[in-house]
Length: 115
Length: 115
Image 1 (tube, rainbow over the protein chains, first blue to last red):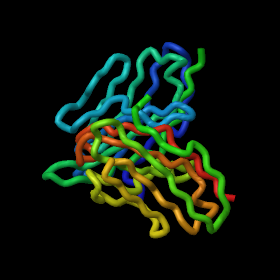
Image 2: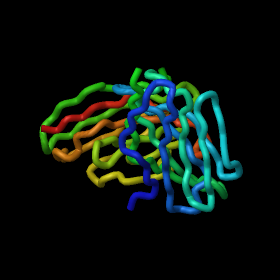
Image 3: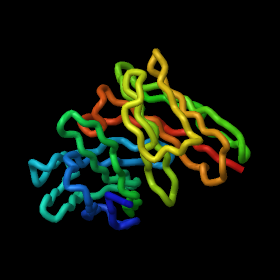
Image 4: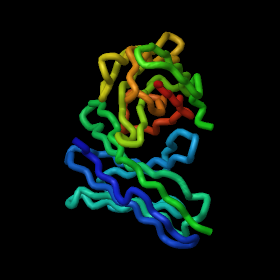
């Protein structure tokens, strides 16, 4: 059972455009939603993360929008650059009450930003 | 560079064989996580160790085992290998035990090819 569904599978954007990647989750107990960026030949690296007590978090050109009622969250990359070309993974986990739960990842989106 | 090291970088072996993947976490990190990344399954959490003890278990096969040593490095043992075990295996580390409360730093991965 895939608990985090990510779309699209691949995305091509022109330089300067906006890249939008969407994720939907099923487990309403999830309370931590990170996005990871992975370049070819490298391991994933944390890009930005959000908790459900806020609807939006912005760090530079990267913004997470979170819709708790719809159980969806998305990554927006403003002014996309060729250097942003990578695979992006959304993830989710539950960490309340002193419990430790695994990070569940979406299947990834391959972003290509054309110059 | 995340500070997490993994060896070897590449591994080619035959079906039925056993291999050991090694991971050294970032200095000061007590948690080590193992992930399997394949094209069809995406990034799958296998197992987590915290300060030498198993903390959380994911989709890890019985043919696979792991341990964390007193110096905090970890090894993932894969036995009776099958063609389907061919994948990228990542190790990640974090400071504490809570998978979703803090950043996980990923190593560069070990690419395993089972022939």
